[in-house]
Image (cartoon, rainbow, N blue to C red; front, side):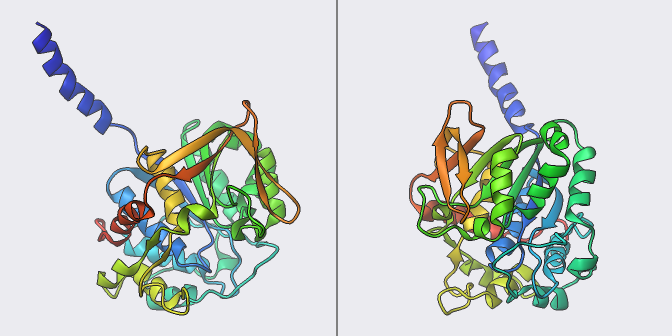
Length: 322
């Protein structure tokens, strides 16, 4: 009788594990400066193809001088067979570090998309509110890989909606331990970052600059088809005076997105919980321990190359829905 019970329990457990619901995710990206945003969106589409997540929306948090960040996002979404994913843009834009993308206009002009210029796209706040209102309580994960402008606006105007619908916010931003210079995503809109850090009503998991800096990916995109807009982004974006595709570049944003979907995988992450991230006027991040704190930050375990292998495999996987 015991033998029969064991035999029945093993497949039942397998069914339960396999039936875990996909993460319902919104990506908030500054598809503008670095090509890791393009690599992150590729990674998330592959995870969606595999049933690990559902992409609810892809909003843009940087007002790039090309006015083409949303079009670049739409080009990648279209390549992966999801041309109708909601896209919203930040109409005000970050307060510092404005720039002209090396690749956004090329993705707009060279690949199918129909969102139009950033200043005519739907507003990011409106997209957030519409998508969150349509979701069941407490299930959405937001992954922020850029300025926190959109998130600050959402938190100011709809804090109870965030509290009711968002399970976790994963932020690529800051330094842990602190560094002399503010990290770019925080410095781009310091006031917004400080507001989110202080007022966001649910859990925040922070991934600092140090996580992705040594995780080099992108070279394998050279083996993907020429009609892949992510490949084109890495061909045009420069890293250390060469194209990013010629040897790869750091994976700041991909690492955060992988955590947002797969959670704290023991082989990659050590998670420090019980505290708050505080952001000062210039934009430096500081960890403040507090047993009641809702924040956590992540440390990388093991060799960066192991994480790079997983990320790159997801970045170069061919679309399943085209």
